[in-house]
Image 1 (cartoon, rainbow, N blue to C red):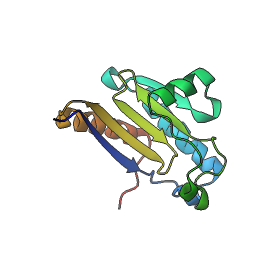
Image 2 (spheres, helix red, strand yellow):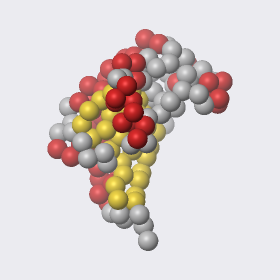
Image 3 (cartoon, one colour):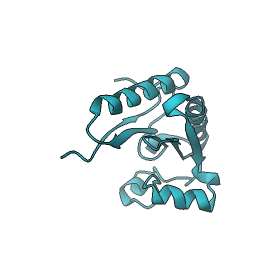
Image 4 (cartoon, helix red, strand yellow):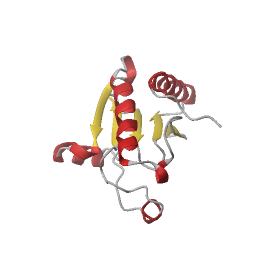
Length: 144
């Protein structure tokens, strides 16, 4: 029995250094580009962006209850410099139905997550692909 299906990908932007080498200014630019792209979503992708630097206590509690909030404290992320300037330049977007998330500047610059109850992997993948394409129209991804 399949209870839920989830697909997640990590992406980094072409014009910015990876997390351990990114400056405070560039990390803030990544957040601005990605949050702007997410706030232009419509339909099933439409939702809300939460900047961790200005997160209200009520929003923080709700993101924790939803199991969406990433936080500082991982010793490996700390040792490579990914927690510098915490929580500035970091945030979380989720759609209204809470089936789609984007983490900004956690480990990767973007962690894009699509999920839903049941086994409909095509719906989960289609949502993720659509959103990634829309984000990349505003913030080009790095390619190998």
